[in-house]
Image 1 (cartoon, rainbow, N blue to C red):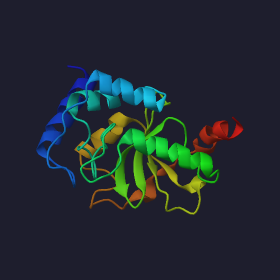
Image 2: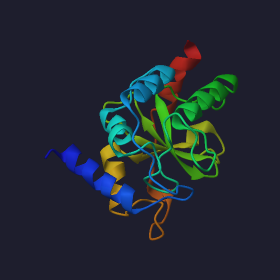
Image 3: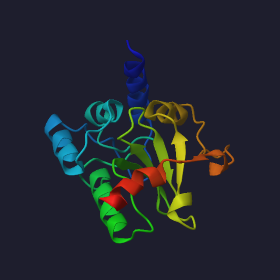
Image 4: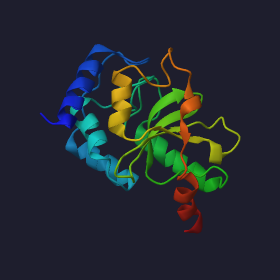
Length: 189
């Protein structure tokens, strides 16, 4: 069994055993057609591990805090799905140049207070970023939560994330230094 298969097995077991706030049951995984529709709407492919989570574990409802957002349909809490969140953030960012949203950065989990865990789908490592909009400006609103989606999932499974009660919070997260580089392309275009 590969390392990815082992991780997916662990995530699936934890997903069946726990339920984040607002979820009463684990949604069924998405089918290939739903994944294709999501990627077409986004204009990019999901990283293989993220696609596997949605295709093999469930359409959201598992993971840290409120759990992963569903891909195309709203969550039971009424929270818009990941694709809708991304498209709305991109639209808002194009209308407010002080708060641009980077292309290919998909919100996958809501932390509350406007904060999101996001996967950088344009990077081969698929880092997970924390968007913290309560900052004074967009340049200080982005942090690297985990260098890879794999690391982020392991941290959640090991109950070692900044969001755990035993943690000091987000103080140790490094700023995402690529933010202005990634949004400058959009501003020039």
